[in-house]
Length: 210
Image 1: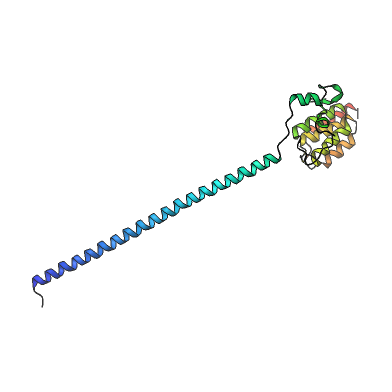
Image 2: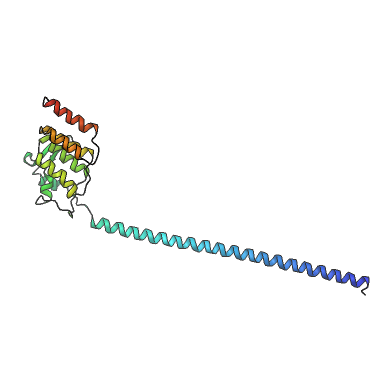
């Protein structure tokens, strides 16, 4: 049997061991938490660095692609002197017509050489350019030229006719008193005819006394 003093020593020793176990366990848990936190933060940092590198690489590829596209599709720019020469100093002989967008000259034929447009051509008009040409053809009554450029904007220039372009063609047919053809043209359009087209057609009907 243990004496009271020995029992006291055993109790103190047991408490010390228990405290030591608690301290060691708490220390291990803290170390584990710190290690996990550091691993997570390191993973996040590396992930952000990798994402930044991927973004830089993607941006670099995008810039390279855009540069190659721009280099292969750079529009040809003409100076005022070039246009003066092409139109023979804006001679009336080179005037295609004059519409709501002002005088339009036969710059297409002159600047493009033989006047035959090609799909891979560097000098390509946009929707506004073709609209000005169609308006001039309409006001000058150039039926053949008007339909030529209307078809060319689709076939050769790769442009989609808008309501304004179609309206010029309706006006062109109306001015030529081809009202039935104008109605057929409007019905054949993939887009719905707007009020302006019908107003233009009705205006020509009134002019013709129908």
